[in-house]
Length: 127
Length: 127
Length: 127
Image 1: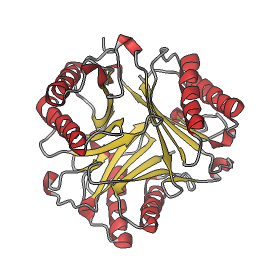
Image 2: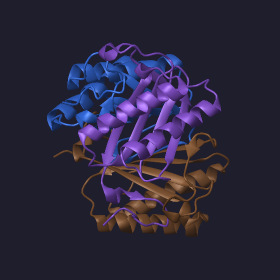
Image 3: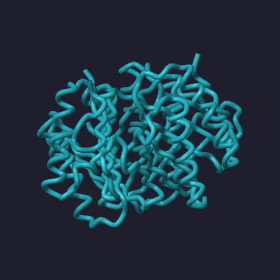
Image 4: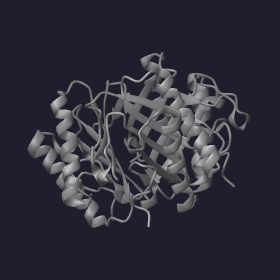
């Protein structure tokens, strides 16, 4: 269900890109009850004119290592759960890949259960 | 109104890409009352590191022919209508382009009517 | 907070691309109370097969100069404010960059305050 879009500046090894995606997926399963195997992602690299960020907004010092993660997922998770997800995901990206915690930007877009079809033309999550 | 984003792996003929977009558009008009000519799409190709999918989630066997379709559209369509849309779109992609039904992934994001401007700086759908 | 995605056809100078992004940002600050420095954008160029638009929908004459702007932002802005934003953004893109008002397409996606983390793994806007 979640459709994950990850944006970063170009120049990273392919393996780095893949690991970012895997860590996002694993953390969704661990923390916000995304079903195992529910892993669909678009990972895009941009040149410096294609990814714009403010290096100081909210007094957070960002760098060109910034990772912008936008996740479309089902509505209904609590604020507490979302907070746990941001914390855990950011910690894991830091500890496993060395990404600075200041450089992890996350945006969630919530939708209804019936807004997905995973194949076969069926709305698998609709009641 | 709908803004359609279509993602697929690279290597398909240009004509294939365009036909996928046309079939999505035609099916929106036929099935979920999108006005004729309301056709705005971004179609993107990715390499194998840029489009990640699970080949078995929900016991659906996906391949590299997967097409991920995300549509931003006005809220208010019924579950029944959404189901009819998934079914019809998947069937048409199969019958007209030979895309396996297992390889059609659809995600809808719903917004309010006043969230669009189609040009001229006006919110054409707002009351 | 807003995450802005801008799509245009390829071939524009880099400076043009950057100015479009800057004008979108400045107009969000001026018109819809986006905090200064809250500037995060993805700007993408597409070939003619990757960006599809109808040249006449709603009797608006669009050209290959079309700019498609999708903004994910917090919910709660009034219809009046959204209308003011569309008008002002379109006017400024015209007066400052010579973009035809017919070629400015805007789509807003609204989310909850707690749906953002701007770094450090914290939901900065959550209560």
